[in-house]
Image 1 (cartoon, rainbow, N blue to C red):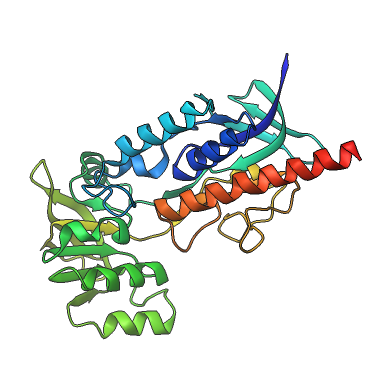
Image 2 (tube, rainbow, N blue to C red):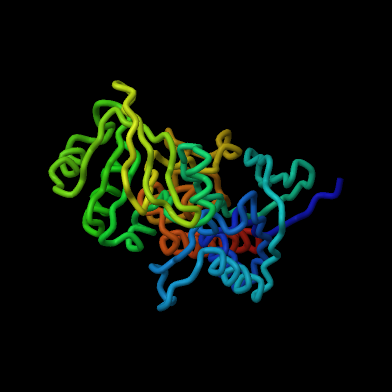
Length: 318
């Protein structure tokens, strides 16, 4: 099997990956980018993106990803289909396998594999998620579309409380569904939600079905898991805030991560614990998770990779 040698390999194709590609390509690093199992990343499930600078009329997520890809290709980024199935970062050469067969040896690797939102897994939930008609895993991204309307949010952790509070400033009413009889969130976050007038908290409550009219969400059928009573809640937006899973499993043997699987980076940099391996976007960011912050860290990763290569070349010439 022939081994391909690559100066800069980018794994993943969301705003972070494509921005890294644009910067790396313009620095003559000849980047090769593998799109992964979800080309374009999480944004491809977002109907409208209104908060990315430079789009005064907004843009759809898929359209924005196509534009980013074209921009990366304009500077000769080699964008490829396929996903990375195995890596070996134990030696001086960074080895990466694509689709379980092709072996690539890389001078630098930029990881931008992102994270996947966890959903409840209900058929009706997935239906309206795909339709772009009322199901979302990001209140900061999509809350604006539901201003002065009634929404539902599922979750009991800090991020669920944060998102519920955010929605409460935009929406007429927010119903929060908590599966147990208490929050998992820190006391201060839970208190903030409890003290917000237009947030109603339903404990011991789980979703049976997301209701809709075939175009958008009209509410949810829920059940009290203690009394077994079922009832409907009217809402136009159904938000799921039960966490994200970073797509980083294949890197576990080599990279330092937190308990959830987010890759640890040097604060303010894109550096990981392995020299020549960099991380950007939601694979490392569990706080902001926005397209614009992902793009910013993509730029940082490419600049850090460029500096790493330049320092290496200087050492060789000396």
